[in-house]
Length: 86
Image 1 (cartoon, one colour):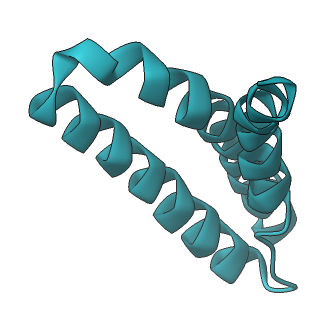
Image 2: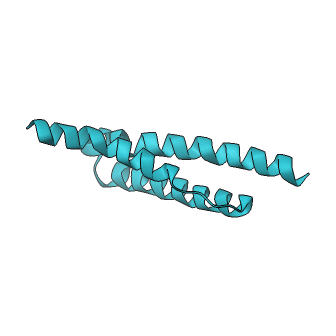
Image 3: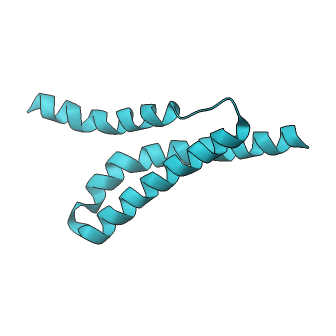
């Protein structure tokens, strides 16, 4: 039981850590990769919401922290790319 709880609470941490590995040296590719990762997370949430609203909180708990971190990194990458191009 304790191991199961640890695994459940570790999944959002693993998703966030995985989203931190999405990077590239090229600013345009970094923006593209982050946008695709963010879109994939949103698609997972939409599919979970439409398929069964009983487990909606379960998927929110897993995917929303990773989506939030990825969205913030995407915003920062866009701002930095706009500042370095001009």
